[in-house]
Each structure stands twice: as structure tokens, then as C-alpha cells.
Image 1 (cartoon, one colour):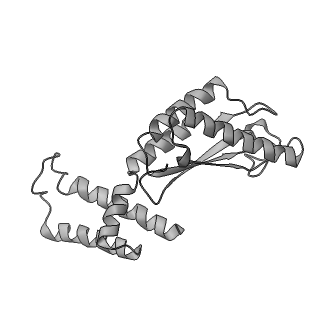
Image 2: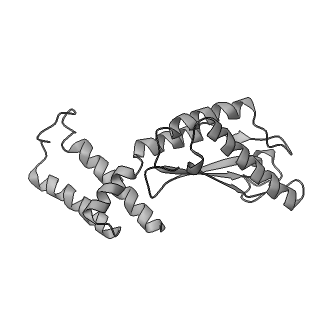
Image 3: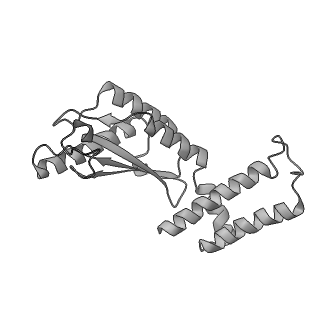
Length: 195
């Protein structure tokens, strides 16, 4: 899906959730009159319709996409879990330490509530050693993390892996041990289930 379409789909989700929060369900969670003026309600509906049209969706397609798209709170919870710590490795090792296992537990718990996302796992190495070995090690690290998440109940189809070797070093020193890491990128999928 092109980046613009993903952006518009995300915007559609935010607008829809905001409308639901401030609209019919925003009155203390009560059903019925939202208290918003008819002009405000019409404006919110028009914004949703215009966003769907800009994304190339029909009204029915937009409704299906909103239902399948992960909520902002869901993605935020995943990103919060991911940002709470880093997974780093010893030199020449793809094995997880106890701190990494605890982080993976938090990520798996957050991912269980987010069926409409994809988690890209990128493995890295420091610049120490040969390039070919570093590429293999970085891929092995990403695969180790993926397998650990699958063991914790995250559907394998929700996860992708990539080894990036010594690319994208942290800070100014490519040989810094902090570069022996994995990084996660969370994005919405085209459908509600990632299996």
C-alpha cells in the first residue's frame, strides 16, 4: 500500500475515533444525542467521507478499513512497550538475555490486542568483524527475536525480519557495542488479521 494511502487510512482512523469519542459515545459513554451541533456532526461525517474518497475507498470500503485498522491506542501501547527498553546482544551472539525476554513479554502482550499491525524486526551488528558475517549475525538476531515473539503467542504472519549488518550505527562510533541490537517498526496492515 502506498505511503499516502497508509497516511490517509491512519488519518481516517483518527478522525473516526475522534468523532466516536466526541460524537454519539462522547456524552459520558451514553447512547443518544451527542450534544454536538448538527453542523459539527455533518462536518465530521463529511471529513470521514472526504478522507475515504481521497484514499480511493467507497463508503463500504472505508467502513471495512476502519474496522480492520488498529486503533491508535493499540499502536501506542505497542510502541510504548517497544520504547521501554532495548534488546542488545553480546559480541558474536544472537542469544537473548533476561532483560530482553522481559521486553519481549511486554511486546507480545501489547501485540495480542493489535491484530491489524505488522511488526518489522531489523537486526544489527557493530562494525567489528567481516561484513558477510555481520549480515548473517544481524539476520540471525532478528530471527531469534521473531521466534521468541511467536513462542509468546504473536502470530508469525504479523512479523517480518531483516538483517542489516552494521548499517545505521548509533552515535558516531560504528564499532560501539550499542549497535548490536534489534529495532522494531510498527505499521498498519491492509487487513484486520496478520496471520
